[in-house]
Length: 307
Image (cartoon, rainbow, N blue to C red; front, side):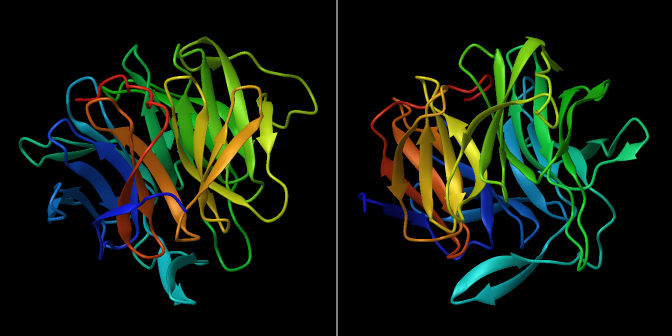
């Protein structure tokens, strides 16, 4: 087990970490329905209460926060860990992409549909350097059935949203290669990492059958290992939070599993990089409600609008 430092505890299913230049880390607390700021001393401050289920965060070109809101999950304790359970939150009214102005506190819904299709459960988000963003829609689980999910591309001003890939099996984490030419998506239950090679922002070069959606399979893990969210490092390796195993799986662009960094929680959900050299990994351990930090051997990829 690596040297892991607990930054904050008592969080209610943290996800979507965003490291800030002042040393703080923004996270969502899905169960608490908030965006929160964790200070370096571990103090937790609620930035905004959004309702539903804030799930993924990214800083946009205008300095605002863009939030994937899944509409709400149900939770239960299982073996001492907080976990999601099947079923729809009683106040669920659909998924959405929200813009949060940190200066004023204003929250605005940018998208709740793509064309005629309602968003079900937006999950994770990443901006490219042209000012647009990719996000995954995980779908929703009910007692006896569940939705397909998809990958979408949208503009930060609310003017355009397009479907990049559909259907996908519980698409969760999303990330971009260092040159923005490839968008990666991790599917949760299949434990598969897919790549979509881009001809232009939001326009993939589709691979033929047997690809179910035009993506290129990068890697699939053996056994019962489930993927959650991700970050990409400066060398282009994809660092995927891996459920059940409780680790970060580091995968090269050619699909080689380079290593698995073990963590003390089977519900490890996300990772981001911070610090002056981007060699501090911040990881959300949602089962135990913690944000932890550890030294990382390679620097993370600097995100398009990080600050």
